[in-house]
Amino acid sequence: MLQLQHVYAQHGQEAAILTIGLDPEKEMIDDFLTVRQLTVPTLWDGRGKAAIRYQVRVIPTLVLLDVHGQIRYRHQGYLSAEEISRQLQPLIEEGGR
Image (cartoon, rainbow, N blue to C red; front, side):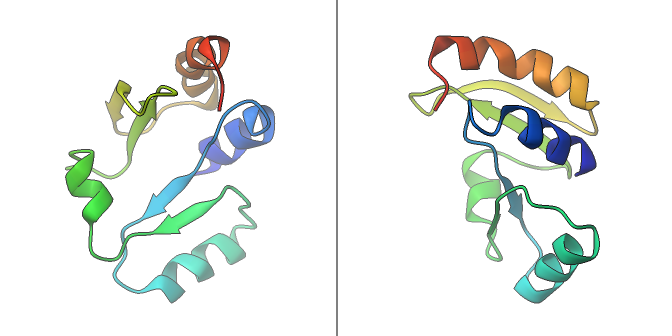
């Protein structure tokens, strides 16, 4: 999550970056973000609809979409902020938001 916070701080003006919290209790997600002082936008998906839609079977999973909503990159597990930025850069160059 800290890696995504760093990527958000770097590229948040160039691309729509957000996380999705799958915990059934929204308050737990809010508390997690507050305690860690994370500002990356986070959507609550307590029913797991996004996980089903994007075939998330492992947490964390990174899914990068292009401007047309097509999945262009998927990774299960942790990545460094540098690697996330490296994978994101071609999408930014193609059209950003």
